[in-house]
Length: 159
Image 1 (tube, one colour):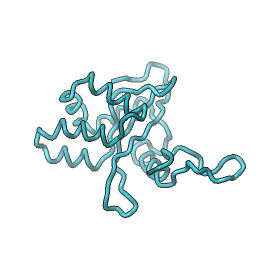
Image 2 (image 1 turned 180 degrees about the vertical axis):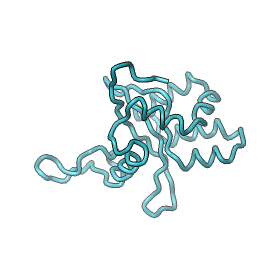
Image 3 (image 1 turned 135 degrees about the vertical axis):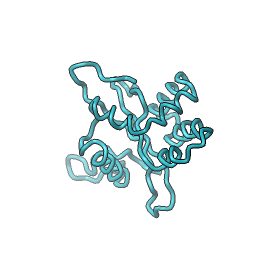
Image 4 (image 1 turned 60 degrees about the vertical axis):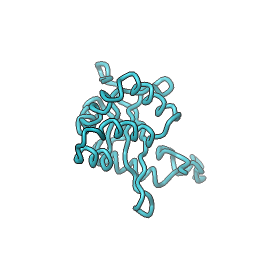
């Protein structure tokens, strides 16, 4: 099991290796940031909307499971009470009945942002669900990547 989420430093200020550093997750997070955030380490409102709009199937899935249930599940994911795979399974189960193979393929192979922001302590976070291939490349697991959203002049978009 992974010990960190890819945001931990590899070493402390004295150069001692951090036992919680997870190189695989750090590389995975870095690739997502390069591909979807232009190398940035946090979301802006514009980047959030752009990534969210790349996966319209997520909104259909939320409509199917119900917004109230979705909000509870999203917060449970942010709090570590459910896994990224649990959230992903609920969303993909909700759209499976549509019978759209292309949508299912996209859901299983491309990262997507969960609409709305989740509370994480005193701050709000964007949660990305992304498929991560195992070291041997034959198994894929869904990972939740939590990102800060840059505060802008106006309020950040919630939905």
